[in-house]
Structures are given as structure tokens and as C-alpha cells.
Image 1 (cartoon, rainbow, N blue to C red):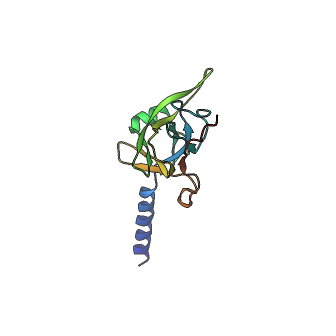
Image 2 (image 1 turned 180 degrees about the horizontal axis):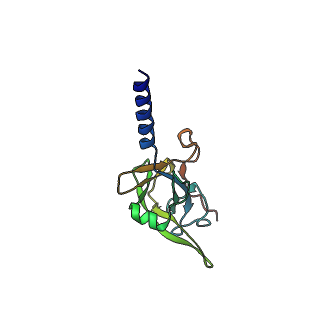
Image 3 (image 1 turned 90 degrees about the vertical axis):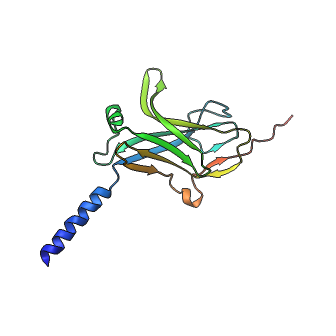
Length: 160
């Protein structure tokens, strides 16, 4: 009986280890340049119709805790997608960002709102998938209780 219990325990631990996510995603949202009503590339959660919503993300290996290198990203065949609860999706690309000789590699992709984009709040996630089918999803803290949602707000009325 003891051997059976040990075997079951080991199998359970193997199952937990196999079910553990391979990646950890860190993400935020910033305003893109097209249609910007304010500073660009600054963390933001309120956008006006016509502005571009840009997701930025980094992917980490859960085993080492380290950010994946460019070689690891290519070898794993990673694909990152930002998804909104209105059905809109944006593919993120792994490219260098920065200026003045200071560069950082991270994922970024945008969704261009239009003058017809409805106002309101939207939940969002960023999902990573590799060519082996492993996935991990980032969801902002507090989103399920109305915090950290993305808001499309009506443009303020202009005064004369």
C-alpha cells in the first residue's frame, strides 16, 4: 500500500510539473503615435477614438526567471497576441525600441481605434504561444473587478 501511495504521489507531482506554464508574460498598454491626443509611449489606460492602443510585453522563462533572449524567442517560434473582449486582436512583434543609442528588445503591437469605435471599457489579455503549443496569458491585476481595464472615452468638447 505504501508503494502504491508513493507511486501515486510521484505521478501527481509529474503531472503538476508538466502542467506548469513554461512562460511568464509581463505587459502594459501605452498610447501610440497615430492620432495621439497626449504623450506617446507612456503607460496609459484611457484612449480617445482615433488613438492607437499599443501593447508592450516581455516573456520570461518560468524555470530560470530570466527574460528570453532573441535566440530563444526565435528557436521557440513565439507568437504574442493581444486580445480585447470586443473581439479585436493585435499581433505583437519582437523588435528593438529606444533612442539615443539605448535600445531594448521587447514585443509591441497596436490596435488603431477610429472615430466610430464605441466608448466604454474593455478587458484585455496578452497570450504567448510557442510552436510546441505551450501557452501563457497575462491579464492585468484587478481587471475582473473593473480596475485596470482599457477605457475608450468620448473626446472632450472643444471650447471656442
